[in-house]
Image (cartoon, rainbow, N blue to C red; front, side, top):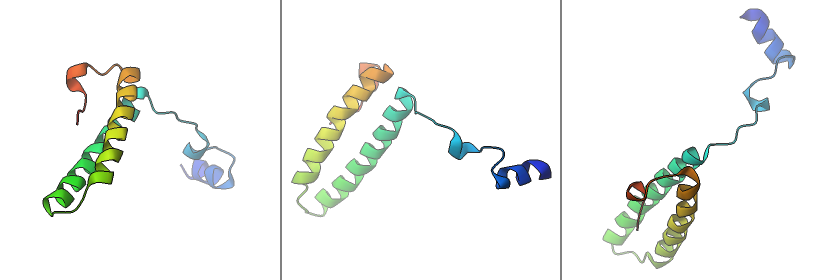
Amino acid sequence: LRAFMHARLAGVVPGPEKVGYEPLPMERYLLESYAIIDAMKKRNVRAAAGDNTGAEDLLLERRVRALEELAEAAGVPEEDRIRM
């Protein structure tokens, strides 16, 4: 372990920063889904407080439409997709 760590610190052995990673379609779909749900929760809190959420609503609608493309690519069944 010590030799490996010295090799890593010297840059002789590459680490995860050198590994290219492209998330799978399902991973991208899930990450964006969670982000949209979080944004919807925050929007609902502001709406309940009486704040104007019109611009936020438009942005969320766009994000959900873009999420549909990710859902198609990931093969997410219709009944499991996020809807507004």
